[in-house]
Image 1 (cartoon, one colour):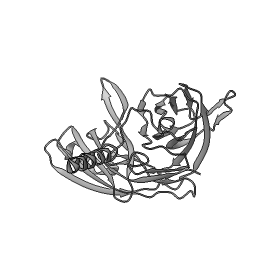
Image 2 (cartoon, one colour):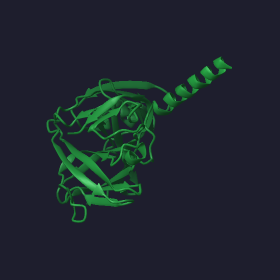
Image 3 (tube, helix red, strand yellow):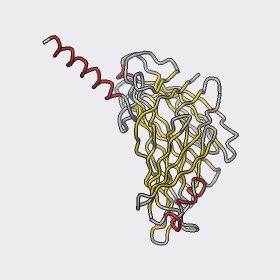
Image 4 (cartoon, one colour):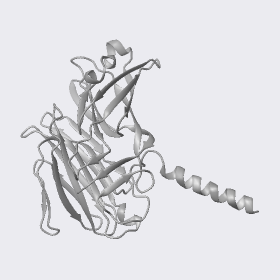
Length: 303
């Protein structure tokens, strides 16, 4: 009986470990939300950001925009705090920002392209006060092309105070994914311009030290033939399929779709694909969320 109780207890511990290890669950109230693609070009393109407090408690958020540019030399940070009343949705255009005289919240405008990270400053240490947030972004342009996607969400797993240091370790918070899986339409020169956006999970916003991941790509066509490539970037990267590999072109790939596996060799990553395609006579875009495999630890440090 003693041995049976010991084995039962061990099984419960292992079961609990397995429940939190691995990639983050999505579509649930969470303590950290990452919107990996925000883009504003004055008069032609903007992003609508939507956040929702899913609890019956007022919460405060600490948020940071991190900008990138084509040469990856920007990495500028813009921080702000946002207060939300119970069950409150908040929405704003990135180009205009947001001001609420009731909660005295002010969100600055953003221009260029980059990401947004928002963390819940829980009013109490119990885990249910941390997991309160959902987010979504809609990037739209004057030509009618729209990219809508859900924020990547990480839950708090144990009670404790918010300190500004967010260990995505599978113990305190959910882990980052080890690999991102995308199903993409093959590139067709002059017909499609699909892209992949990547940002690092690990980020030191306190000391303003940009994260510089090395990235490995594995491309698998419909015939299970595999190709590979690699790149590196600093804090934010938007890549065309041609930038990733010439093998993603329909004429070389030999199929209409490709399975793209993305893994950061130095840091774990999150991201988004942007499908560009023709429907009838219209050229359209759509957000393409990845599926996650495995888990790796990372740390986000807010000031």
